Image (cartoon, rainbow, N blue to C red; front, side, top):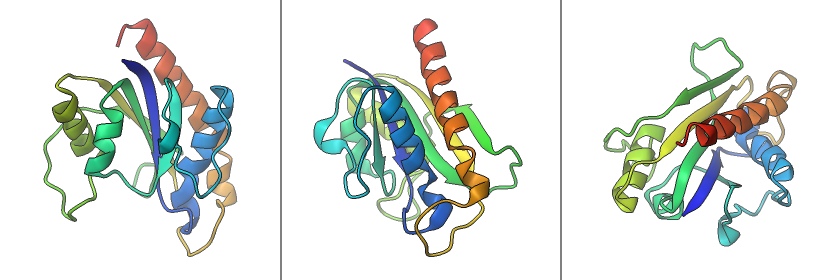
Length: 165
């Protein structure tokens, strides 16, 4: 069984919605993998302890995630949450998708566990987005939180490994 899969998701053409792509590449560098070019998800060569980037969480992606013991999902948010980097433990929850192939993090985890037949540890790390205009690149307010978000992901992975999760 593979250990940890980090899945960043968002839209690179919508400013801060692509924040997870930048976090994924920081993590790939720290984990000893090459950074992803913008046109490569990283799914073609899945390894133990790796990070990928996709436009959204889909049912098909649950099959790729099923062999992993731990999952970390990385995204951008625009909620009333004031913290620039939010992290929480995910729990599986069956929530039928509003749109046919778009899943919430809790529903995605539920589907991963249904496909694999076992439970896994999962976390969500989310960066506060400030600009979602039709543009490439992050706003200055969000870009300063890429490294702290990557640090948080690594701490969560380490803590879960030490705890035997």
